[in-house]
Image (cartoon, rainbow, N blue to C red; front, side, top):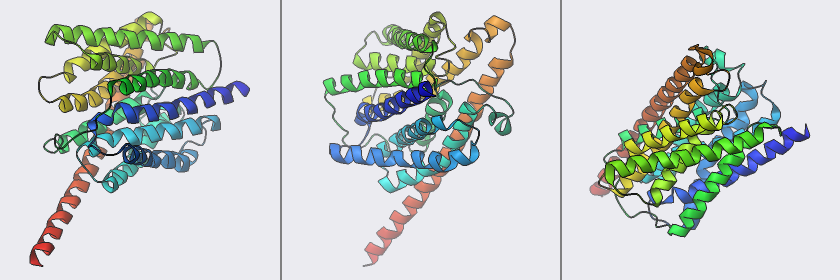
Length: 359
């Protein structure tokens, strides 16, 4: 019991640090504002995820251990913050982003968490149980698909206006906090203090470094130049890739997953043109592609149960179907919800303009 509480505490503290670090690291894609406003709005937009899980989690995941609930509530806050980053980048109002985040939390986050963290509830939802140690289905696949949906709806409205200017040293500190906090969360997600903790830490570090190597190698081959953002992209991609199987990879398989994730994310991210466009693609591709690569790699490389160990396709197919199902569900909910909110907002602006014109 003491070990469970200690691990859960590590998870909560790490996730809180991860949220604050993300707010700083992803600030450059947001419209220019005071830091007080940016941080307060970002924290407020995290609330729907925390509230949704706190209210609905005990109802729909009644067999889940109570020690897991606080961590998963903070995870919900991180996810709701992340899915509203792109909406805010499109200069959407705080109110619209809040409504969108609230709908997403209820319709996507809650069922995705049950699928990832409650094996007994997963077959009820989809008929199979994926393996997901740290919530990659939620924080990476579902979030990335949601970002992609909003990007497609808002593709003509994103690159406008001044953006937040964040000093390079501040971004470096934020990136370091992201890495440390992410590893802390993976340790806490074990919800026990046991021998797996050392393996989780090693796998996370190895995958993060391999992700950096994969990203830099591809960018050097395709563009002949790299920069600090290459390191950031590789580290985040590698961490995301190991999230689903932090305790089930060997260091070698973790390195393979991170290397592939970093390389694939770079291929679809780095383009000539607008730096903001690259930053937005970074958000989508590191989460969606990194998480998908990690989950599928686990189906192949998981120690003792992956395809390479058993020759059986059952685990790999379950991982694949989970990625497809969650990505598709999040994309449909997100695109439909945001299109509707955008249409209502546009209609309101037109009507207001007509009223003012008549006066």
